[in-house]
Image (cartoon, rainbow, N blue to C red; front, side, top):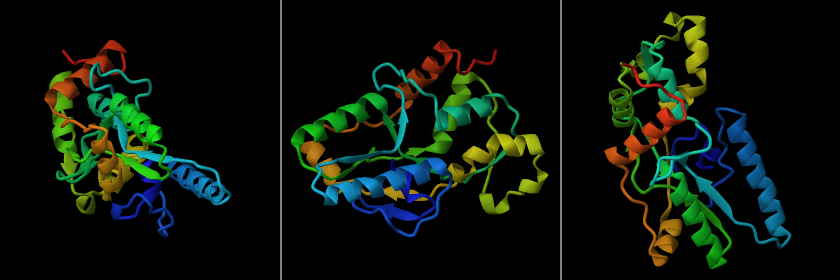
Length: 219
C-alpha cells in the first residue's frame, strides 16, 4: 500500500521506504515491515515485485467490491447522521482506483518481468468534498460540517462520537502524495490508462452499497 509513508508529508517515490516516518495504525506498520522483509530477500536474489495500490474502491464497470473499507466506512458513518462535524479541510483529496483496473495494471506490470516497486495509483486525485457530497445526494442524508483540524475541538465530542470517528481522523487531513512516473510509463507502453472518475462511476459504487445492504437510502 502507498500508506507505508504513514504520517510523512510530501511525495512518496516508488523506491522510497525508510523515511523515518511515523504511522497512523498497525495496518500501515505491517505493510512497511513486510516491504523491509521483501527487500532482504531481494538481496538474496529473489525476484519479487512490490505493488502499492492507493484507495481501492469498486469495479469501474459494475461498482462491485468484496470489502467495504476506508471511504466506504466513512460515508456509512456519515449516513447515520450521528456526527455533526468532522476535522477535515474542504480541499482534502484522496487517490482512488477501481479494483478491476488495479488488478489489470498489476497483471500487465507482472507480465513484463521487470522487478521493482510500482505505485498503482490514479494520476488524478479525487476531491473528498465532492465525493462526500455525491454520496449525500445519492443516499439522501445530510453531511457533517467540515472544519479545519486546527480549529476542531475534540473535547466537545461525546466519547461515543470520538470512538466512531477515531479510525478516520488521520485520513481526514492526509497530506501524502504519490509519484508514479515509472509505473505510468510502463503502463502507457501497454496502452493502459486510468480513466477519470466522475459521477457515473460513483453512482455505481453507491448503488452496489445499496444492493448489498451496506448503506441504506434515506427516504
